[in-house]
Amino acid sequence: MTVESFSPEESVLTITDAAVKHLSAQIARTHSAGLRLAVNESGCSGYMYELNLISDPAEDDHVFKLADGVTLYVATDALPMIQGTEIDYHTEGLNSTIKFNNPNAKALCGCGESFTV
Image (tube, rainbow, N blue to C red; front, side, top):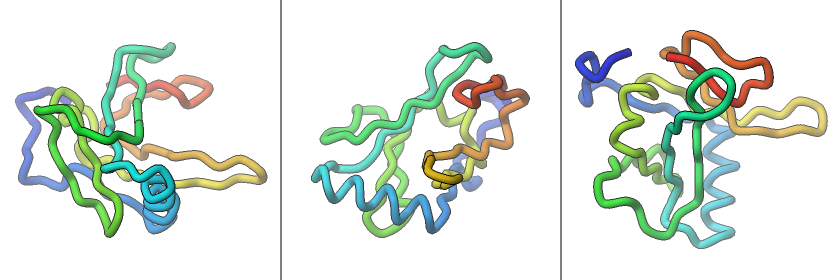
């Protein structure tokens, strides 16, 4: 996906009920303003998600109220790469993790930590 094809009118992000429950608990527990999502060059496939609890958003972050108690601040340069992404909280056995179901990801690395667009 290129910057030219990004449309802010389209749904940028969605979040599952499981992710809302998990993330709102984390935000409340830490008394954070919300979460900040950025995409950085890293990993074996090229890009990696960075999701952090924050007190203050960056000046140029885009704000998304995904659900009661879950405010997501997204770095401007990440918007074209995450458009249409679903944020999920997945549990398998004893392991739980945040999953990004990103329709723009063309390939994922073997460990699932990084992606290519």
